[in-house]
Image (cartoon, rainbow over all chains, first blue to last red; front, side, top):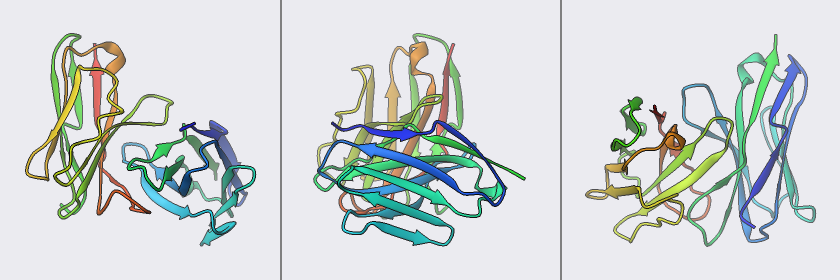
Amino acid sequence: QQQVKQSPQSLIVQKGGISIINCAYENTAFDYFPWYQQFPGKGPALLIAIRPDVSEKKEGRFTISFNKSAKQFSLHIMDSQPGDSATYFCAARAGSARQLTFGSGTQLTVLP
Amino acid sequence: GAGVSQSPSNKVTEKGKDVELRCDPISGHTALYWYRQSLGQGLEFLIYFQGNSAPDKSGLPSDRFSAERTGGSVSTLTIQRTQQEDSAVYLCASSWSSGGGGELFFGEGSRLTVL
């Protein structure tokens, strides 16, 4: 019930391409869905987040698409750059909860 | 510094030894979290502190794990009688508040290797 399932585990994209990472959840109490980006040797950092009252949120080249009925959300990285190469984690939190539940992570490699 | 500080950055220990990992959160942040990141795995919640409230220990994997937070600031995660499966990166995070959309600010982690 508390799991967030993330796919794919790894992704290789050419520079300029679109990177898409998907997450699914079961707990309908989740009401906050952030994405974190982690570079090697660093801690994760918040990239972008969405609440279920909107279906899409865009910040620069990064877009979250949210499908409440399907209980799925995804991260799209447009015009992917080598500097985007990192591990991406989706997460979710229920309003009453204190901690984030994280997906298993996607290692993105953008080839130059 | 302005960020979450963790020490040591790397710790190698022998099976059965006790280890202590330290976290110094961002000044003013009332919420503090410990997560564990194993190779190829996501972030596993361990424990959460909020102000002077009793900590949420629901994620601790066994009674060998404990944590405390002194004076509402620095936290120490203690692992007793370490096992090889405890090998992981232990991440600390802090935030202004625990609810709503509070952004978590993570440290760089303490990498624990149990031989």
